[in-house]
Length: 289
Image (cartoon, rainbow, N blue to C red; front, side, top):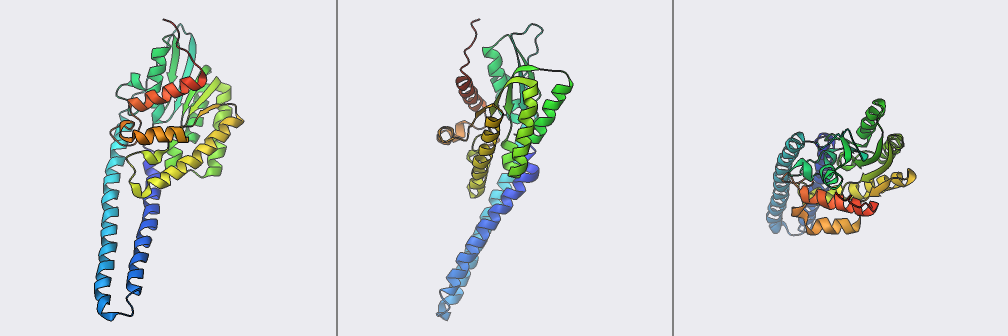
């Protein structure tokens, strides 16, 4: 994922929460006032209570917004400090491409070796691993990563695609997202013999997002994952849906153990869980050393 989400998606999320919350409480205040129209002696007290309720609600929203923006700043700095893991070998058993967003970079892992690319390298010491992932990349940006590899004359046995989270947060229109997915997977078919797409989790679980609008992100995660899954099926790509109920339950039970200190990116435990899940789906066995 990465810093791009904060440029577009975050203001939209904040606006949607304010639209939902403030009118709701204003409506409640109006109901309180209306209920005492026949009792003028109580009207002043109720009006004060209604005003206090609205003021407290706005103050709470503003405090959460301030904390949220500070969290966004931490996530940006965290993404900027991320270091990609790759290992280029002259003698190679297999060639692997890592591409996509900050989860491909491994942002949030304690060490680059604890990212999915690093874990793969540990299990397959003869694998030649090229990592072109960039924090903040959306699906459309991953298309450009693929095309640069094609222009360089590269070809891979396996591509591990880490992308989608920034489209969830930025609320990329679904029709455009579906088209970007088709373009990306079609181009990847020319670049790699096999592609595995590690989809984003339910981002509504990320501690960064206040409860007031985490539900917005959760809803977007579910809808976007349906788009990703459908595109993967059309192009014969393995899609690991980390927003599926079993994975959501796993992350919800361990919510504060699977996110980095910025409350947004995965941590080493989360990358290990993702890697083992993908390896199991693919039926991969570690090579004897």
